[in-house]
Image (tube, rainbow, N blue to C red):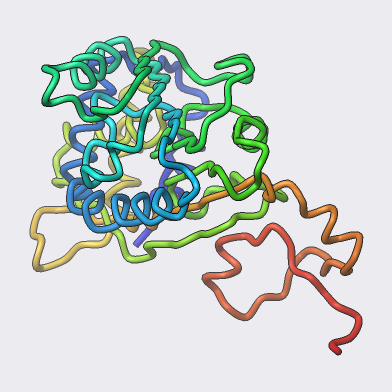
Amino acid sequence: MATLSALKKVLEKVGDEAPRKPLNDKEYDDSLSLFAEASEQHTYQKNFIIPQLSELITSLSKRDEISVLEIDPGPESVLGDLPVTLRKRITKYVALEPSFQYTQSLRRWVSPTENERPFQSSKQTLVRPASFIKESCPGEKFDIILFCHGLYGLKDKEEIIKHTIEMLPEDPLDGMVVIFHRAGSHILGNLVSHRSLSVPDRAVAIKDDDEVIDTFTRFIVGYRLTAGVLYETRQAQWRTICRQLARRDDNRPGHLIFSSPEIMIAMTRHAKNLPDLAALVPLARRPYRVKNRQALCNRPAAIVRPLDIS
């Protein structure tokens, strides 16, 4: 059974020469809805994302008032499922959402009636129709910067993460960049996490249907093939690849199943201090020889190699 990351690489390789276009808002929304249903997103969010976010926000014990920057939250923020006591600590909420359609939905979500507002203590709530770039929010600091699957459409992911670390408060224990992302994606480079946790057994199950597969593959690669000489050929190849790489299960007849491991990463200002450690303790040279397969797949930022143990 292939992972989604492996599937994406194969699909992109086959569709390399075919003309393509970015997904429009409707295509992206349809694809996202299909993926959310296929991956049981609500259950995953309830059982993994919310408990982890709750624990991380609670750990900011010095802060009675918390400012949050959320990147690409979609039509609603995952923060709305936090316990009321934690949501009341959010006094500033800024969201950057590239989809105009989702921006409108998110604005309605954050500003309903007075008693139904998700962040009732918020003194500043701002939803901007924009992608995150280094020039976003100049001079501002945030206690929590959240990428809940919001990194996928961004280029230079490592540089973006480094920039957001600089947007945290000066006290290294007073703020965090929190990332929920597909495991196996090498996004950190030599950054060091404060806390990380993986969900290795998550899976996605889609119906074995041409139209469903077409919608699913568009979401995985992030674009659609356009009509032309190569269109039908490449689209048929994508369907074949999905059927070949998927696992089938008697308990889910008529479905194609893919592995979708996830990882949560939290980083403080200490994330960029690896060079300081390397100055004190030698680092093992790449390629690493690691016995633990999960550790190897997660691609550690570094492995220290002390000269002696005393």
